[in-house]
Picture 1 (tube, rainbow, N blue to C red):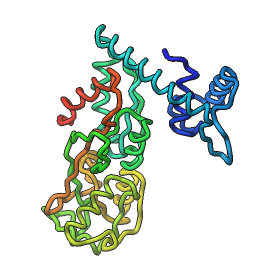
Picture 2 (cartoon, rainbow, N blue to C red):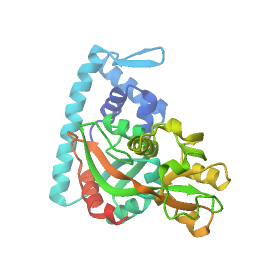
Picture 3 (cartoon, rainbow, N blue to C red):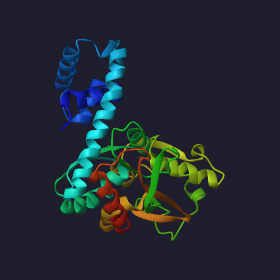
Picture 4 (cartoon, rainbow, N blue to C red):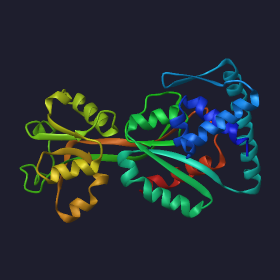
Length: 298
């Protein structure tokens, strides 16, 4: 394995944060600080300037970062080539998933992947779509799976599933027994939605725009950060919502919520996202191939 001090330094330098580096490396912050101090003692110079809770690379640190990137990249290439020859698929794979996908889609996919590749250690990070895309851009995760369109052309985006958003309300609500509804039929009812930055909200805003409406036309009363919170609020009779049909299996079976499709349907892609130029370790390559073969079966 490449020098641990160099790996820790590279992570801190890339993220410019001891806290984020500790989270990424699954280390304590004091342990990260200790590794950096050891490397600074080895070079007999400071590698970071620390001012007002912010850090930046010194001139020496910038040189070390350039070489560290090359050294770690070469090590990964060597490891990948040898693993390809031996057929081994091992290592750490860091996946990020937006909230709806993480709660309702990714567990079964990862379960099947781990059954086939038990030597790969999978770590999952959860955020909204904007957060996951930023993690991919910042190289904090290897692969992201998100629930809204991605516009960054430096990222590879592959559609994995298609999802439909439904109008969801209590079973005794005036809309509950309709076969389908037009988006304008929900405008007068109290509305509950996801927070800014979520893929679900982006899709709703885009759908409203296509129908010559804006978010301000909805009677928005509450925002929540997860589908479970929204469903609980709707079950309590606080309002109605637009939410993924993937999240509703339990509630529809129990009869605690009713779901009605929109006309025209509100659909969105669930997409796999990764850096176009990123060197792909064997574990990442196998996951991408596995996902392409299995995700349409979700």
